[in-house]
Length: 477
Image: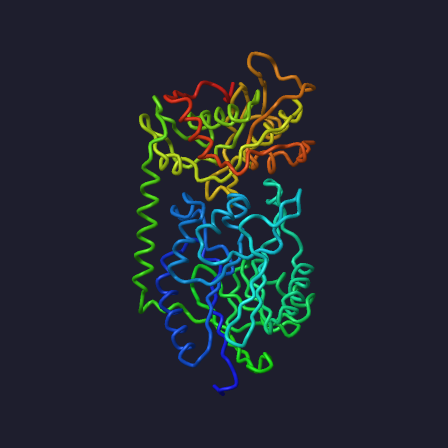
């Protein structure tokens, strides 16, 4: 390389989704490339474009992603963008926890609190790096998602904020402007078209494997597939005196499994042991076996419905059985038992519903086609029938599929179709199952960022020992 130029290499990963077994190989590859680039007087950075965390991995789920951040620290990541996995799943408030654990900045310029307009704590909008004579500006943007509204936050259109920050970075002397994006490929293309002067977009979210970067509006767009299958590499040869990019290239490097970084294996083991300690913590006791049955009333379903009703201080509660994964044995209950009982990250919610709306919701939730569905957020579970608290529901599974409910008692009184009732459920039922009713989502309140296992834990701590059984709350005549 000529002495008057500098090599800037960006290594990148995206959408690891908990596949931590890839990290020792990614780290070994990155170390070799960093050493090679440094030997030529260049600079190499390692970025992640989001969703390294995933609740499919126990260590990630139990720590709400901080275990993954600790592993990424060991790998030596220089920056990451906030993905949707640990931020939408556990709420944007979780970003501050991740940022506290991470030794690298977590970028997100388009994620703010709805009421104040302030960036969510833990998010960094951009970085300006001085790499010898070269100044590199990098802006982070995260996925657009309506799910943030549950937590009082919002993600918004990236183009205006990227345009503004790119201009600011150029004023600060940045020679190269990059975007670390968790928007998805089509949105990255639109961003490149909308904002002049972007040199590079490192993308994610759509899991595209781009063997060679795309060029859109003179912007390189790169993405490295998913699950750690590749390490992306971008090389920019930059004139030291002017900061102009003279040559640029990019490619995907298939994961080299011939060498693993032992330091990363040790970091992984440390986090696994840490999580095992958390899982063994006792939280309470049950005097009965709490079984699961997705298509009949069950003790664990009754327990969860009771937890929601108690927590949200309502007359009634209902929750689909698909929120549950594994029965609870009688005796001491550990935090790990609760994690296995429910891996759902749904949040408890409270609404005011008319008797008519409640009847409609129950009829819908009992439809055979609905109970048999296996929506992606339930991770393979059937949605199942609703489990209830404060209600006694009699239904005819062989009657009209759209009108199975025969009788509903609230306490000892018949359901009053005109009266309004306080109802507890989760964001799944209140958001998905009642779209066909007149329920005003603006009047629904959520206990965010509490998730179901945490609600069950607090209930057990306060109410142990707990005894729950199937007792005819919802059944055929």
